[in-house]
Length: 144
Image: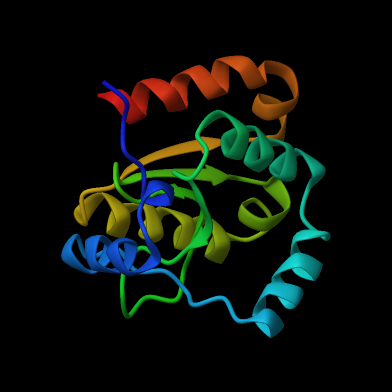
């Protein structure tokens, strides 16, 4: 049996399902889309590679820069909202240069877990050196 994804639904039905399950996402206006595209260009090419691979492997199921918890400003790098699986691309530069950044990452993960999310974290090295295994790990998380 084929699995139905959010992308298979009409926009109205998609909104209804997302509201029913408490899934929240930013509304993307043309202005925000342009800013988001420009911001994405400054991210790691390996983060982009992972995102593109997830888009290809799981069409219509993955959302980038997803806000999972209303009232919180943080976002998940790559989210599968229906399955509540969060994929974080962790860079040393962001998380490793300060104690504050490290603590914020831990707090954010605890909040996600408390809201029923499973969090998978990957580094540039993971994506560069073992991308196919990363995708298999994500696939396993999605079906379990």
